[in-house]
Image (tube, rainbow, N blue to C red; front, side, top):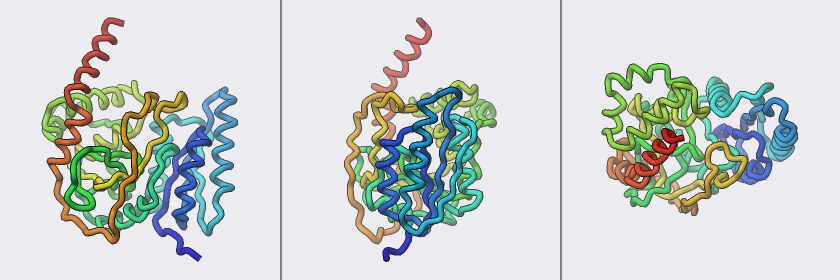
Length: 302
């Protein structure tokens, strides 16, 4: 019999049985010894939610056909994106030293789990490293099997309890850090900072119901690094769907899987500033700036 995968996996899902089933098949193949199922409750007076949430829960519960401890972290009332993800991961990491986290629309490659395991074990005591990402969509050739960056995606990731304990879903110290210019110094100014600042403002004023912006903020303010693989290991299948929470537009990224050579050659912890600059050029270049300005203008005119 195949040995059970010894890193706890957390699956976060809601009301999309079709995408949940695809992600779950990958988890099933990895066969973790411990699986946390984090599910929000249906929205109030939403019959479609009631049906689909129940379907998703049944799908994953009945789909576990390997020796596995299943821990259900189910909300009794709808919590929304921000509080469900935050409270779910927090509950997991109160019990575990570390976990791999997958949402219901991120499909990992077969190598993703081994990659996360090696990284979690290798850097478990290095407080400079706060997360492991499975996504790399930047056209920049990383010299080793992975690098360390200020920018790392939560589309298929892993972290330690020691890092998550620094997370604040309400970014309560934002005004202080904004006024003293700390975050601007971390980002080096430019549109990357403007974009982050605008998003944090919306979280702080409760105009945006999300959790990932706060995680970026947490890492930036603690000078935390994320591990980025040289080869992309995650496909996001949640783009362009009416039921998407954030990615309602069609995907323009190439989510093709790459390959890593195992066992991995370990890399000394040091920020890869060239990768970061390539990331900024891609996601915070002049095209993004124009889009941002036009949205602001349309908002004012409206």
